[in-house]
Each structure stands twice: as structure tokens, then as C-alpha cells.
Image (cartoon, rainbow, N blue to C red; front, side, top):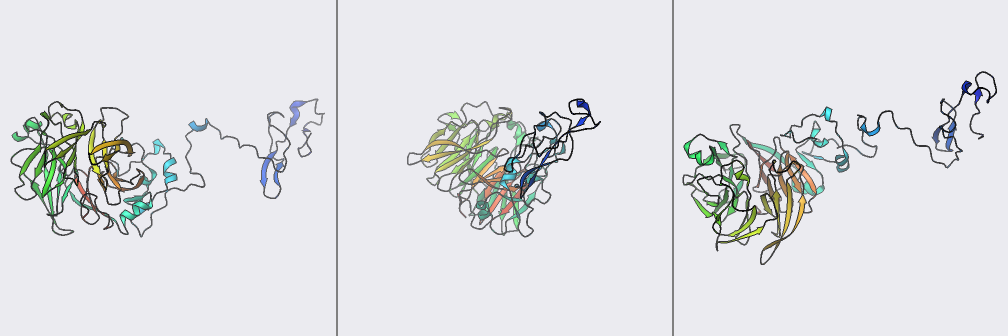
Length: 466
């Protein structure tokens, strides 16, 4: 037997082999001593056999035995989760700055108890099952920083300001169009119920186009744009020439089209394109301008779902249209549900949102893809997954630092040109549209609200670069 183990002592004074039930075995416990390695302690007792207790000789350099698992059924036991000692949760925000640094390691392995779930005020849908712990902090700042790249875009004193709120209807839904010459912001609404006879071709739905004229930073005037020529179901658009070009979803009476509109009253409209070589367009959703004078736009089937458009006759496509020559090309059919579009700073990359409807697939997720634009013949090649936001992106914007901004249900997600999440701007109620203004201004539409995000003056939009 080992010298460092205690010999069993009979409790009734008999020999060891005469009465096994009368003995109590002393179980050794291992403890670490910094000076002498592992030693054996003779405290406590156990009823296990000599084999069950696993007695063996222990040298000074031997490894300690594994700790016993806690009672219960292992991983299935509802035990509270505590971070390991080397991982700290998100540090509390500093009082002097409007942003909050995010610990990526803690944010990537967190767990959350479903029974103790508390709704986050930045989330608007029950489908957002488990938000990040950063969204549940009581003093969460609106700017969450995942990388120093986002700090460069934010600047020293970023602000988030509510410009206007109108609870009557979602008047500020689609991406805004900022016209620099007139210092005006145009924003279209979501389809709003309307009982007037003019809304009959669109199944009693109407889209309202709002106009904001800025005279100074705090002063502006809001007006409703009236287009008496046609009742277009206008959506997002882009600046083109002296005016703006907007995507019109169309109705049973009016065709889907690309529409040019003057920015001055009475805001006359002129259809630029209504068909693809004789076949009517489905319902153009988003358009962006290119330095060569062309307009790129997406044409999904989304407007057929509310049934205010005829059955589509074309597959979902992304087109390139040149208003000067009327040249129209289908660029790609590799996106099932193309919606938002955005060009990179050098216009060599096209970002596209693939937004499948909820009824298409229960596990389908809206995804941002990237294409390479090959010149001089202008082809789209090398489709690749760029980013998979945690919530469906509604709109895209790119700044001069090549950061990609995506309007999501909890605010604005910001990705660098490699597709890594570098920051988030938390907006109560979420964001449905994005548009850059002047000198670091980012306009975020949220249905019934418009938010003004003020960042570093050098953070400008990649398209206008104001």
C-alpha cells in the first residue's frame, strides 16, 4: 500500500477482513500547493470501493484529477451563464462620448435565457428573437463601435437627431433623394389606404411624395409633391442631370416605369422607360446613377404581392439604361429578389440586396451580394456574398471611406469594404431608407420618422461627395 494514504481503521475493533461493513474509508483530496506541487489531504469520507475511488500514487509533478461534474443533466440543465474570467462583457459607455465600444469576443459567444427575455426598445418585430447583449444595456448609446474604422467615420462628436415625426401614416418609408442644387430632400411613403376614386387602379392604395426644403440647419419646410399628370406609385430614386429619377411601381392603369421629375414646382414628370423591348417592366424598386450617364435599376416582383400590378411577364432582373442613347441591357439574373442597389466609391463594385418575401422560404434571409463591374464593355462578374445582416436590409448607401450602410430593423448596420461589421447606429423603430446629405449628414427614414445622423464632416456620400 501507499505510505501517503491512511490505512482503514475498523470501527468495532475487529480485523480488516472480518467485517467489511464496519469500516470507513478516508478519501484523499487533492489540492494545489505552489511550493510542493500536488499533495494528498486526508479529510472527508466516501463509501466507494478502492477501485471506484481510483487511488493511485501521485508524484509532485503529476496532474490533478478532473473536477466532478455538477449535479443535474449536464448541458440541459437551466443554469445561468457566466462569462469566463478572461472574457468581459461590453464595457460601460464613457460619459464624455456618444458611442459605446463593443467587445466582439463577448458578443459572439453570448447566451440568453428565453424565460428572462426582455424586449429591446430598438426592435420592432417579434421575429427578432434574441438581440445582442449590447442592445439590452440600460445605458446603451446610439452608436455601437465594433472597429476603429467606424470611429473614423463618426468623428469626435456624432449626433442622432429626430427631424420630424408624423404618426398619421408611414409617410417616410423609402430611401430619400437629396438634391444638392436646391438643398431639398424627397421621400416617398409606403402604400397608404385611400378611398378616393383616383386610387381605384391601385386597389385603394396611394403613395405620397414629401419634399423638405432646408434653409439652414434647424429650419426647413415640408410640402407634398403633387403630380397631376399620373398617379405613380413612386419609390426610391437618384439624382440625375438637373432633376431626379424615381422608380414607379405602376398600377393596373399606369405602367411601371423610370420617371424623371423636375425639382421645381410644378414638378413635371416625364417617363423615361416603361418596357424591355416590348415587354412591360414588373415594378422597378431602386435605381442608382453611374458616372457614364447610365441608370442602373432593379426590377423584382414585389408589387405583384399586394395585387395592384398585373402578373409579371419578366423575371427579376437588374438593368442598365442609358437615357442618351436609350440603350437598355439586362445585366444579371442571378439575384432572386433584387431590391436595393449601391455603387462603391470607384464604381467598380455593385452591391445588391436579395430580399425574398416572407412567404418564399421560412429560413430565407435577406443578403447583400457584391458584383464586380468590368469595363469598358460593362459586365457584372464575380458574384459573391458580401454581408448577411442580422435583420433584413431595406436600403443601401456608401460613403467615401467605402463603408456600406444598410437600413435594418434595429437601425443602420455599417460594413467595411471587406464585409465585416464595424458599427451600428441604433434607431428606435428601425430604418427603412438611407440617403447622404451634406458634410457628414445621413438621413435615415423610419416610416413615421426621419432621423438626422451627423458624423464627421469628411464622411460624405460616394455618389454626390458633398
